[in-house]
Image (cartoon, rainbow, N blue to C red; front, top):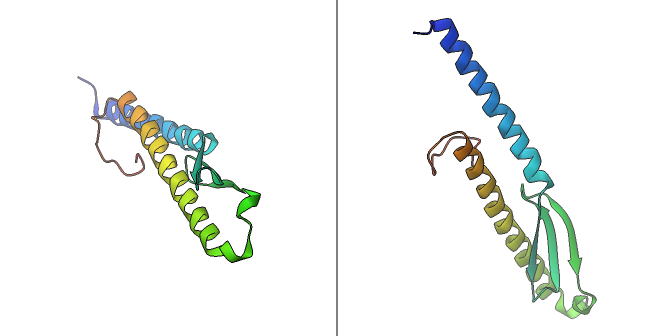
Length: 113
């Protein structure tokens, strides 16, 4: 049987490993890109899987002063589309990490999803 010190050292090592994996996952999510679209692709928003907005593209045909409200609605819709995709990608990546740790699917641990 292991001594208490050995068990504590093993627990500390496991915690450090998990912390490193979480840091790696967060960095990976910030490098993964998703694109949200609205208006049949007339408005596009690129974002990271962490939800950081990288860019907005608006088709020239939408830049009409009288249609400002519609343009604003399309930008909001494209953002929401990108955010939803980012959330799905982040969830999939976190699920991979949890399964790699031997944790049951759906276990809600703060910082893991």
